[in-house]
Image: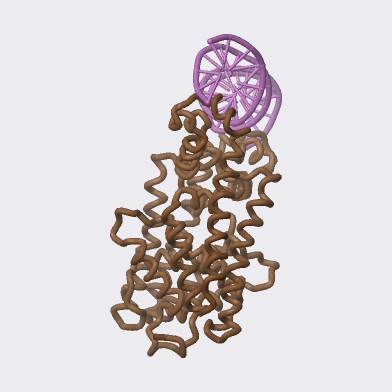
Length: 190
Length: 190
DNA sequence: GTCTATACTTAGATAGAC
DNA sequence: GTCTATCTAAGTATAGAC
């Protein structure tokens, strides 16, 4: 039941937003009365925090694992892009909540979630900085590039449909190409 | 007063989200009572629609202008990137609302706002398709690339600070570089 | 562990005076 | 054009029975 409630919350938070999703509706989808939710969670906010924390920890662990497993910057980049897009398409609703409901966090919960997001950005920045120092990646502003790549791969979740025109793997290939080689054809390079 | 109310709404919708921003607070910032808002706007939703429609029309007009003025695909791309980033940093709060509160739109208003967004995407797709046909841009999935570039340039608004480390112009140069040439150094290209 | 009933608060919106 | 006063609905959360 605890999981059913959380699944219902994920669905409604993603569809209508945290503040627009009534606890009564979450309860209805989970098949119980609103009051019964309070046996499993202390309040509505706790649902939001658990959804966000779970996904961010998952994301961080997977990227840490990639950095430990691989030393080659190009392999790391490819794996990190694929990992980000796979998780964001697989847990589409959950990550949509992570990306849009930060401001719905109570002041006492916000720092924790932001620190998890910060950790993820730092892992990416480590990957990028190493690649630039090795002369594999073009030297640029590490922070800006990390924000850019993360935003790019995150946005996939907003339009991707599992039954759509493209498979996840095809999307990964397209994004990888864009991130590594850019839009211009080589002969146009300066 | 009409503009004061709208400015207050922009501030609070951006900071707390549409549903979490009480009309009474909007009124307080505008310096009037909540009931007085209804002399200027029929309801809260009308504030949201006006904010979104105004910005999207502005964005569309500027890109249409660029496509009319320039024929060279590379010039068009540079101008479109700069235009998007400039508007998104100049009207940061307004565009943040456009990008996060689509789901707060009532069913009768949503199609209109989505059609404006659709127009913008189509203008970008026209730009990209032409460049690919001319052999200036790498051939790829036009829709996916348009989503990617728009997401990339939109995200700038989430972290950019006017008094921060980088100027708008510096950010534009960095993003332009990333979009056109990608992350890898040329000798690493396949 | 789930229920019914309800307390408490706050929201958007309206009525009518000035 | 703005106010005070108020309506009505809806939200989160609690109390206490089963």
